[in-house]
Length: 151
Image (cartoon, rainbow, N blue to C red; front, side):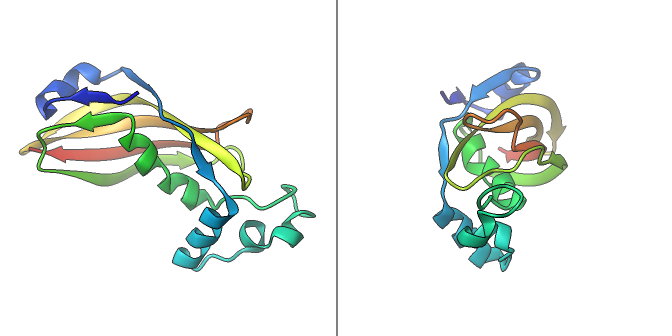
């Protein structure tokens, strides 16, 4: 369920609030291969299905940076801020990949608004985000993304 706020003036009330979980997103081999092409990262644990069967994870796994990049669509389904001129992915304070993400998995994100800072003509949100794999015991990504919203 997407939380909708009408303006950046409404964001301070969300500090410390869990925004819930996003919908599930499929991470299939095609997505992994496409990411490998885009980033020129063709390490066999990601793209060689036959060799990866005998590898440390029993099959191919998503790139860590692919997993991280999925935070954008997953985050977008958690919070909608209306009446803003632009939104900017400002960066990350911390990222970890506690568990691999096998091809064919589904992921979702949960997030809490950790901090809010006023900016000239906007605000900066820092989020505590966790990406989990369906049926997995540990998160596949734990990150602290920073987003800026400008009026």
